[in-house]
Amino acid sequence: MDVEYDVIVLGTGLKECILSGLLSVDRLKVLHMDRNDYYGGDSTSLNLNQLWKRFKGDETPPAHIGASRDYNVDMVPKFMMANGALVRVLIHTGVTKYLSFKAVDGSYVFNKGKIHKVPSTDMEALKSPLMGLFEKRRAGKFFLYVQDYKENDPSTHKGYDLTKMTTKELISKYGLDDNTIDFIGHAVALHKEDNYLAEPAVDTLYAESVARFQGGSPYIYPLYGLGELPQGFARLSAVYGGTYMLNKPECKVEFDDEGKVCGVTSEGETAKCKKVVCDPSYIPDKVRKVGKVYRAIAIMSHPIPNTADSHSVQIIIPQKQLGRKSDMQLHLQTILGRLVISLIITNECPLVHTRYVFCCSYSHNVASKGKFIAFVSAQAESENPEAELKPGIDLLGPVDELFIDTYDRFEPANNPSSDNCFISTSYDATTHFESTVMDVLSLYTKITEKMVDLSVDLSAASAAEDDF
Image (cartoon, rainbow, N blue to C red; front, side):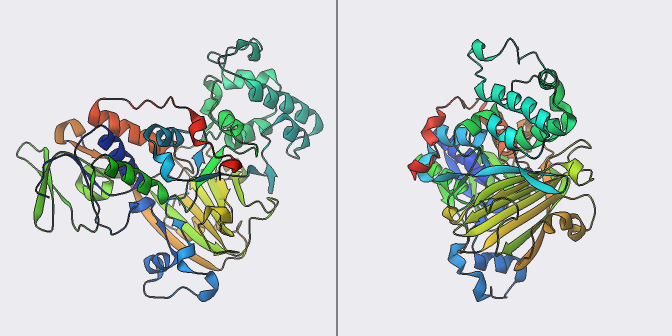
C-alpha cells in the first residue's frame, strides 16, 4: 500500500479483470483490490454452500442436491460467441492457456408454443417444421448463400454488394415470409430489435462462429463456469507484475483538491495512484441507476423438454411469442450431469428483443451428476419479480430448489477526463459477452488513448472436441 501505482482497479468482476490484464501487459503498475475474499465480483461462480449462504443464510443444502464442490453457479449467466469479441480478447492476451472450452451442441427457437431446432444449414432448413415446403426451399437457398459467402471472395457474392444492400433487401431476394425473417433475425443473427433490417447485410459474426464447429452452434462455454474468466485475466495481470489484494474492506477512493483521484484507502492505509478503474459499487455517487434485473436460479433434475435431451443447448424465445414488451432469453447448461438454464427478459427498447435458453453438459463441471441449474432473468418492468419471472419458470418443469435474486443496474455519470475515475457499466440482461467486451474496450481506450487490436487467428482457440 505504500507504493504509488499508475492504476488501481477495484473489484474483480470480469470487466475489471480484463482491464487489469490489458493494463498490466502495457507495463503499467497496477494494484487490484477487492472487498470480497474471492474473485469474480458480480460475475463470480458460486459453489453450493456459497449459493445457500447468499440466499438462505445459515441453512444447509440438502444432501440430495449433491456435493458443494461440484457446483459452479454463474451469477451473471452468459455464453460466448465462438467468433465474438471476448474470444478475440482471450486470444489477443494469451489467456486461452489458462482455460478450456467446449462447444454448445445447438440452438433452438420457441415458436407458436413449441421448441424447434434453429436451421443452421440448407439441409436443416429443409427438415425444419418451422416452415412449409415452399418456404423451406427458399430458406434453404438463403442459408446456403450465407454458408458459402466469403467477404473477400466476390465469386460467392452472386452479384450482391452486402456492404450497401440492406438485410431486408437481401432477404427479399429469397422471398422469405415474415415468420421466417423473425426467427432468422432474432434466433439466428441474435439481433435484439428489428432495425437491423435497414442496415447493411454484411454481418457475419454468427455465420463465422457456426462455421468453426460441426454441431451447428456458434456458442462456447468454459469448463468450471464463467468464474474462471476473471481468474484467467487475474493470472495474466500477475504475470506482468500486477499486485492483487482480496478481502480489503471499504476501499475508499480519495480525491485531491482538484477533484482528481489520488489514491485508495483501506484499513487505515492509502495507496497512491493516478487513475482508478472500478465497478459501480465502489463509487456510488458517480453513477446513475438505469434499471433492475430479476433472476431466478433453479436446481433441477432434468433437461429442457423437446431439445432431444441435448447436454448443451440454447433456446431463443422471441418477444412476439410471449406477447410482452420485452424478450426472454433462456439458457440451459449441463455440466457434470447438471443442466444450467438461463431465461432473460429484456426491455431495453420498445422494439423486438430476444430470449434465450442455454444448456451445457456435465463436461463443463458446474454441477453434480444428474442435476441441472436454470437461470431465469428479466429486465424489470414492474415491482413484482415473481410475476415477471413466471413465464420463464413455467418452461423449466419441476424444480428441486428455487432462489429469487434482484439487482440494480448502473452506468457511470461522471466525466473520466475530469476525475480520472473509469467506471464500468453493470452487466446487462443479454446472454452473450459482446456488450460486456465493448464496454471494456471503450474504457481501455479512454484510459490509454489506444485501441486493442482484435484481428487475431481464431484457430488459436479452437474448441473442437479433439482438443479436449
